[in-house]
Structures are given as structure tokens and as C-alpha cells.
Image 1: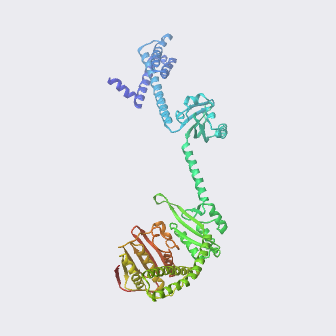
Image 2: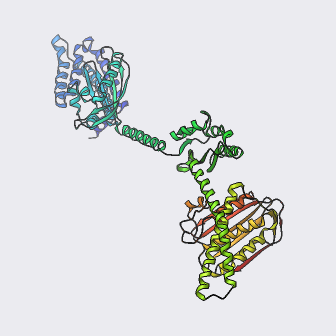
Image 3: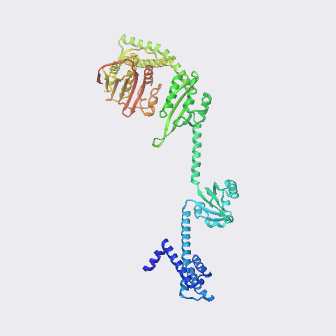
Length: 595
């Protein structure tokens, strides 16, 4: 048992086979030298015959090998050759040498063919070879891809043409004929129809291989149905998206970080034509191109430069064109994808000309009505005061008079608020500037609000320096504190707290009014300072929705800003900032009052 295993290991390695071949060759040469020239002759072809017989089967190969060996050994005797041991050894060695050599070559060819076949048949594509006579080879993957077996393709020369989708047939056949006639490469994407009538998208690529009379065309077919479906879906989505943005009322443009335009919808193209925007350049450069037509040119140009310098900033602006002839709202915001990837910047433009015209008509009507109501309201309140100073009224009459007085006072406050906003719209708010103590204004406002806070057991607190002097309109600034503090008390539940903080640095005064109330939903914060706007969480509380509008008008008249800094389930903080010219700040104190 050891000897066959040893022989198997020797002949199973390249070195062993080479050694065996060299040994057989040496033996043949030696035998030929001793046996004479007749030791090797035409009979040397017999080993080849035997080895080729093994390709038909092991049994036939063994039978032919045995017969060939006997003929190879004894056939020279017919020619009178003396068969001696040296002759037999020479013939045997020659037979072995040829057998080993052919066996090595055949084994290598078979292994190479098997590896290549496994490789080809393991690929996710179909390989094929086509000669002048037709298809000579196609890999078995074709059956799972198209439903036809290998035998179908090899036995039916017209199957490929018959399987071509009718809509693609003429195009594909023309391209294929051109490639064959010119021995050029062929590459085409088309559909083949399976036996179940389902169409399969394939990409077919082939090249001409020159080999004289044995030249052939070799190629491969890949199933690209999923890719084509994805492309179709992407194209469909792109068409829908384009239709969506083209169908919106707002003008929309998408740019990259630098402002280079990638997409612009039809309304944007329409506004660009009407406003005379330049046809080339970055987005902010094109918008700057119409600065001469903007009413507030300086503010407009400043904003465009800011947007160009800060592509990550969100911005909302409104501007008028040609003396108020048209009004537009502009909005821009960066588009951020996954992993904070900057995808682009969206710009929207909405015309609000009609809305502003309606606002002006409404404001004029409100101003007129307010003026007309002011005189009779003053008379009503005056006569109510006289009514209370005369003969004593019964309890029921006194209650009725008190109800009338409270509602008249409420109506008078509303009229005063409307008249105030009308004056702001007419020509801005005129301020009566003087040196005022801002901390004292806050303290007075808290004192005025103390009865309302005490009724709800709300704690009022002031945090700031002892004094803080600045030049401002004391009456209007006190009105800001009054409105913010009264709002905070109104929307804070019982046993809550309201805190006012006042501070200053070298450049600005900062004041905040914080409460522990119901908070304001984030989507509504941007509209807090609009006229008549009421938050959904405060609509059950009486009010006109004008208080914050008046506060913003007063703060902006002082060249300041006001924001809603925080809004959540635990309250709201309003902060306003005023520029300080010459302020005097004393030692810091903290004052608190419990309602």
C-alpha cells in the first residue's frame, strides 16, 4: 500500500512528473543506443492512440492501451527485428515517455478547462461564442436569466432574433449587422422576451477575435432589468419633482454653497424676466443686479452681501420694487443631508403685492374707525365718571355701570393701540428722548403689575443693577415693560413666577422677561409679533394680539431688536436689546416681590 501512495505522490506533483519523464527519456535513449536504430519507429504513434482512447472512457482506454502496448512491442518482429531485453526496455520506455508527456498535457488541459468552465459558469452573466456557422457555446446561466435552456439556443439558430422585443428588434439587429460586417465591437442594451412573456433588460457586449478561418465573436450578456427599473423610477421621480416645483406658486431655486444655480422652477424664471434679473452669475449676484429698483436699496444690498458671505445662514426678508408697485418676500435656507453634508441652498420668492395692498386698505380703515371711535368713547367714559359721582346707585345699577366702565376702558385701550400702530405705519414712531433709568422703569412696571400677580399668587422678581441710565423715550420704554410683564402674568398659572433681568455692557442694554407659563409652540414663534396673531395655547385668554406688535415697534424705533429666546413646556423668555450711547450703571442689586 505504501508503494502506490508513494508513486501517486511523485506523479501527482510537477517535479515528480518531470523526473519521471526525464527518466523515461534517458531509458529510451539508452535502449535505442544498444538496440539499434529500429528500436524507435512508426509504431511510436500507438501510445498516442491509447491515451486518446481514455477520453472516451476508462474501460476503452485500458483495452486500447493494452493492445497498443503489445503491438508496440511485438510488431517489429514482423520486420525481422530481433526482440531482445534491450529492445523491450527501449520500447517500454518510449511508450512510458510518450504516455507521461501526453498525460501531463491532457491533465493540465482538462484542469484548465474545468477551472475556466467553473469560472465562467459562476459569473453573474452569460458568456457566449459565435462562429460564422452560428452559436457554438453559451453558458448555462442563460436558462435562469431568460428561461430557455442551453440546448434551445444551440439547436435553434433564430432564437435570439425571435426573442428580441418588438420595440427593440430593428435597432438591435441594425447595430449588430454593422458590428459583424466591420468586425467591430458590439455593445447594446435591449429587451429579450422570456417564454412567460416577461421582458428582461440585458446589456450585450461582444468583440471579434481574429483567428484566420477559425475567427469567432466572443461576448457576454448581463441582466440589467433592476438597473433599468431603478433608472425609470428615478426618471419618474425627477419628472414628478420637476412638476411639483414648477406647479408651486412660489419661485424656487436650488444653488450650491457658492450660489451657482442648479435648479430653477418656472415661477422663478417668470419673476426673473419681469424683474430684469441678469441671465448669468451666482444667485446673489443676479439679485444684486436689480438693486436700483429696490425701494430700500441700502438694506437690500447689505442683505445680499451677508447671504453671499454666510451660505449656512437662514434668512427671511421682504422688499418692495419700484416705489411699492410690487412687494416680495424672500426666504433662503441651506439644505443639509445625512452626516451634516451640505447639499445646497434653497431660495424662494413669493409675491405679496396684493396682500400688502389689502393690508394698507385695512390699516387705513382701522385708523379711520379708531379715530371715529375715540371721541364717543371718551364721552362715554366721562359720563360714566359723572354717573358715579351723583346720587348713590343701587347695587345692581352699580354693577351694570362697572361692567360698562370696564368694557369701555378695554375698548379705549384697543383704540389707542390701533391708533399707535397707525402712526407707526404713517411715518414711523416719534420718540421723546431723555435720560431715563431703565431699572426704575422696570421696577415701576412690576409695581403696577403687582395687584394682578397677587391675585394669582405669582412671584415677581427684578434682577439688575441699582440704576442704569440711558437716553431713551421713558414713556415708550415703560410701555414695553408693561406689555411684556402683563403678558407674562396673564399666561402664567397660579403660584408661578415672572422674572425681569436688566444688564448692560459697553455697547448695549439687554433686558429679559421670563415666565413659567404655558410656553409657545416652536412653529408659532416666527409669527408672535404679527398683528392680531394669537397663539393656539393662549386663545382662551382675552387679548387683541397687538401688544407684542407695539413692543417690537417701540424697540425697533430705538434701533434695537427683540426675540423670543426660549419656548418650551415650562415657559417663555422675551429679550430685547437696545444700543447704549452713554449709560451709567451703579452697583448690582437683586430685588424680589412676592405677590
